[in-house]
Image (cartoon, rainbow, N blue to C red):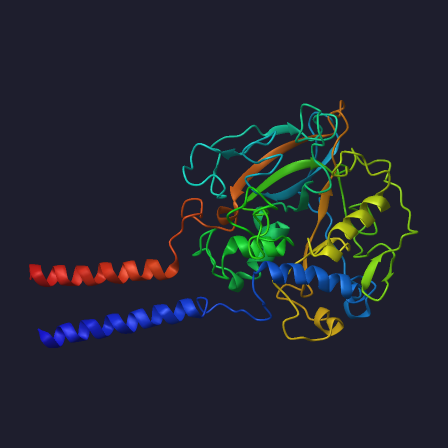
Amino acid sequence: MLIKNVRRLFVLSVSLSIILLFNLTGGLHAQDGFGGFSYRNYADTAQDIYLNFDKMATTANPLTSGMQLSRPGSAANEWRNDPVTGRRQVKMNYAFGHADWMFGTNGTHPLLDVDTYTGPKHLNQYSVKSSWVAEGQVAEGSQGFGNPSGSGTGFNSTNAPWLSKAGATKKDDALFSYMDARSDQWSLDYKATSNNQLNPFRRAAAALGMSYNPNQIDDYPIGATGDNPNKYSNNYVVTMWLDEKAFFRPNAFQSVEQTDAAPAPFVQDGEAGYKPDPTWQQDWEADLIGGQFKEDGSQYDSYSDFYKDWWENNDPKGNFPWTGIGFTYDWYYQNADNEEWGTYWSKVGPDGHFLGEGLAEYVLLQGLGGQQDGSGYFEILDVQTTYNYLGGTFGNGFAVPEPGSLAVLGLTALLGLGLRRRRVA
């Protein structure tokens, strides 16, 4: 009996050692070129763009020549003619958090159930509603949806939805296919609030060029810290039909039909970095629906005014790693090896994207008092937690047991089963 017990303890100790090694190595997942998910790295990435904008990946850069961005509605089943208005709509994805003005718990078209979660209110752990109203209207109120009363500013340049292209099926979505090609960089074993680098919510946020704070501090920026700075936890993904003239590509071209990866004209900002040329002037395209608003509620008179203001308020200050080229900056890929940026950007990731090149991005415009011809209407096709969107099946993914906990529980159960069997025998 003593020998058998010693053997059993030996097996248990070896198993626990393997589990510890598994967790310490990140589950044996690759971490190549990765500098971490801290807010400092996020902000530093924005500063790197500001300082090295002339070396960014573009269609004109010799190291990345021929680079093209995707176009929504470019394939079958990615577009349709709206059955009511006859206008062309395309399928788009939008990642959002519980405080989102449109789809959050208090939004104008809420998709989350506030009654299913009883924990701290600020945790982004609400469930998706079992049913939702599929049809909505982009243009509500005097200054865009999110403010049906017409008072205040509604949506503006600080909280307008930034979209990505949806495919004919989910596996063809820009976000899903991008994440799937990098499946060694995240794991569905980790819950939304996990600090593990394989947290899938964090990895998706990085692909979208966003910071990730699972607790979504409600009193931001008063209660913000360096590692927990804001409330951009995009833990939900909604897929919808949207008028193709209701959004624009935020680069040198507003039209989503123009797929060149090109920035507006840039000049050196003293010796510090780069900025859009102050003399550059570009009007809004006449066929776009709605407008873009400043935080004070006034409207941007021109596209170039919006572009230059957004750059000044973000990249130089490190608020967002915005490229201004038409794609998100995937800050998972940081210049961790201190290579020259030109060389770094010439490297290609697992699916042909250059390192740092995330998803083609688009900005939703806000309407002016409603679109009477119905051009501002959208239709929701699906909404899921990011965990479920990526294929997770364990509830909503917010409370998934950590892998080590699961393994320990399993070994404990097996050990208990062995002891129980011995007693029965």
